[in-house]
Length: 224
Ligand SMILES: [Mg+2]
Image 1 (cartoon, rainbow, N blue to C red):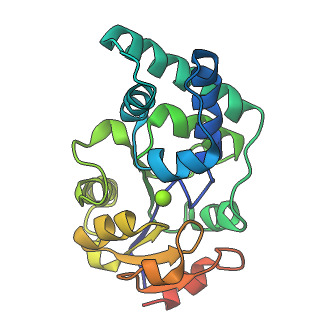
Image 2: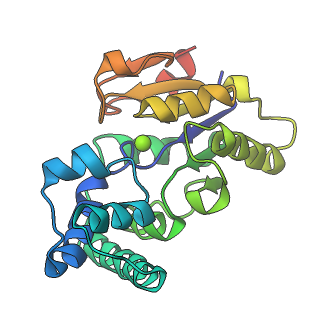
């Protein structure tokens, strides 16, 4: 039996990359610094907002002051929230799975995204309050694949449910090699979903599935 389940966000609950891409283009295209979706996938996917703007200006051989960068980051956060407010589609089965676990088994979210990007999407999906604990990019010094964020998620659950949570009996749900490395580094088991990478790239997971559709809490308990 599992002690807890910890969900990743981007690539597990919602495919947020097209939304981030759209927000970046709204700001960069008017400056003559827009780029294609293919270029985004190839060059920008691993970057946080700060480095993504720096790279776009570097690629366009244009100077970028700290003040201008801060203004662009604020504007991008606003553009992203506006895009999200129009509506987001979750991956199949994930909202149902989260709802079935919530209140039954200790449940956390462990994400490299900003809290300000996550909250409006959880609101859209009717998942506000579904998680007992949330760990976001705002709270850790080292992002995945470092184990810090998963360690903090387990620690938060241990504080809320004293004596009930062991990392080795907790299951992370992840879509990337970096996420799997972070979770296993913190001692958790991993169920990987091929939403972003093919099965052969998701080594280190206990099990790899193509979708969370049809997976319920019973199935998660039977995994180990
Ligand atoms: Mg992910």
